[in-house]
Picture 1 (cartoon, rainbow, N blue to C red):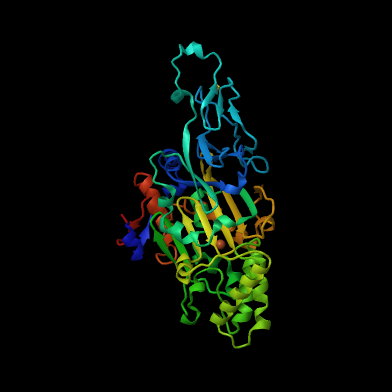
Picture 2 (spheres, protein in one colour):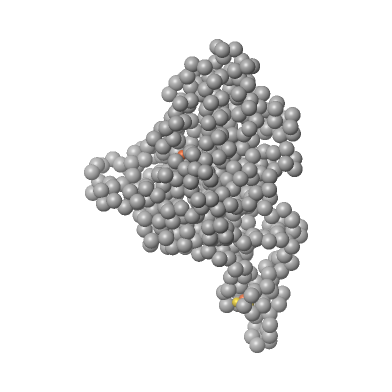
Length: 464
Ligand code: FES
Ligand SMILES: [Fe+2]
């Protein structure tokens, strides 16, 4: 499958080994994770020189730190002497261990034999170096460096010294999202869980709105969830699509769109309120919900969907400005192209707006293809100094912790994982228009995985 095939919405399928095979999961350890740029954490989690944290994926562990000059540095978390982890990172453990982090570091001292490293990764102490007959060099005894960069307020790393620069990796997706100024947003909440499915099964549950009608049936009362999706090389986007031209406008691609029905003043409010309240107070903001509530007072009964959206956004923008939250000016064509939500290869999802983002990141858990580390968090623009203090909180995947909509998503994922093991499953039949992000994920995975799991055209049925 080429990008052109994807754009032509050619019918495709792909094998299930990427979800189910232990051997495939093991191969990810060498072919995928050490080769990609991957998001580590928000930059604001390392505000001061000497702040550091660990990021673990598959068998890899990386230390990221902030240096005295304010720049970031990253190293493989391993001592070059005999391979002890430099910082002990226990397996992620519900309620106990998400990562290991700290502040005011001047150096890292290995707990085994005391070799010591400065914040540049240079070795500054070895006990009895003369025993090596003075043959140890700086290159032999320094930490192994990892490339680090930032985008959108996130820290990214790649373990591949030959990787393309991060900006090139992000490509057009990064350019479009840059208009939304994610770097000016802060955590509103952040939660994680160990979940019973492969990491791809989990991320794919959040890649497409095609499942809304079947999974989140209650949301259909006020909105239509017809969607389109497009590949952007490594990454992909989904947008709300319209079957009805009267709702077509640049805003209708994303979350801030009109509700359906005879009175868009009412349905727009109900749509955004329900989304906000049932997606754990994310994917929108209090300002937007309150401004939508005022539509019935501020606009006449015969207001069109376009008038509702224009008035709603103007009024929310003014209300935010009054409390010191300034919206970015996103050109209409960017807003349209930016759509609803991005899947950033391989494991990061961002559903974005001018003042908020609802995001996901999923990683494998140990050597079990049936388990993953699932993380979700909300970002929001807050008035200067008013962002809440948050930390990663373990939250069992139930409605009380995540809101009813995410609980509905959780109610599918483990049963997709189980269902795909059925000998009666003939292979996925992804919707080429609405679920292209899923196909594109497998297309890109296969490029890293030596062709394994590659989507193929569905032009012959039954397949042999
Ligand atoms: S393994 Fe680190 S000092 Fe020996
Ligand atoms: Fe969902």
